[in-house]
Length: 399
Ligand code: PMT
Image (tube, rainbow, N blue to C red; front, side, top):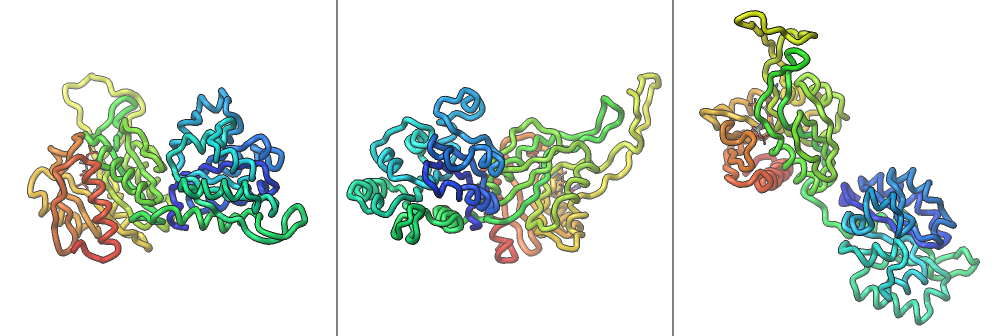
């Protein structure tokens, strides 16, 4: 089920007795790493409550086409665009007929019509209804349009008859859904990325910091998530939007960043230190604003902990990727940091050119070789970095 990590599943429920199994279905999708949103027809709500599905999915459940409150948060067109797949389970005979006709007079059929995502249906109905000419004709038409048909299964039916028409079990529906997606380069990997600057407080209104914008870290987080990784981004103060499917933890200082990194689960696969962590912080934080009384102000600075080195000292060391922002001897200094900090890979770049710029040129350095990436936009280079990391992770060295 690795390919379901970070996937957005829109579950449409129509009015069949097997709708009660959707509670388990939602649970299994979430367990597989997907985000789930649910839309229900009126008839579906006779079999399972929106509240149950809201509690399990952690998201508002869409029940009406015209729902002012729901539309304000996420409109139905936005929801149709949001989905990576729409699964209608169970799909009644009536609903099959409805979408064959292209009707859109309830929330679920409207989503089917409004989406460009793949659609899958899990038919569930009485066996005679399933084998009827009308249903079979609708089925052929839907299959011809590229709609995936999951099931139905055979066996005892709620009406007491035996035959084809049972909705596939939730485990099977999750498995079939996962087969719709290709595995990303980092499917199932857990990645922690630090990004942005840190701020080291002097007094309540002043701090020491640097010009890191977070652009490089955020581009990497977006690319890693797109490749199926579970990404946690520990970010210093920046004014960027959190990329889709990325969990972001905001921090201010280096000590706080270290604390958050160390409190994460120990089963991290990859750690990428992009953050421009301040190497020093004021030895003493002054509770009140320092007054401009003297001609000179002596500020004693003490060394901050080296976060990435603490990570590489862990008993279970993740694949560790560092960055080095240098102003001279970029590759030599970068290689020294690779060795000193016990990293697997390091991207060395020119500090003056890279900070707060949209573009970057880096030298990728491992223990035996070097390779230049860019100059290009940080998103383009982030994509190349993710390919390189995935490849090095699998094969040991860069080349
Ligand atoms: O944020 P942008 O504007 O997009 O700019 C990108 C960038 C210039 C910040 C990025 O490309 C970059 O080079 N990041 C590392 C910056 C840096 O300060 O490197 P360093 O040479 O000080 O540190 C080497 C490595 O150790 C880095 O992975 C750093 O995250 C890590 N480190 C450093 C100090 C410290 N106390 N703890 C650390 O973990």
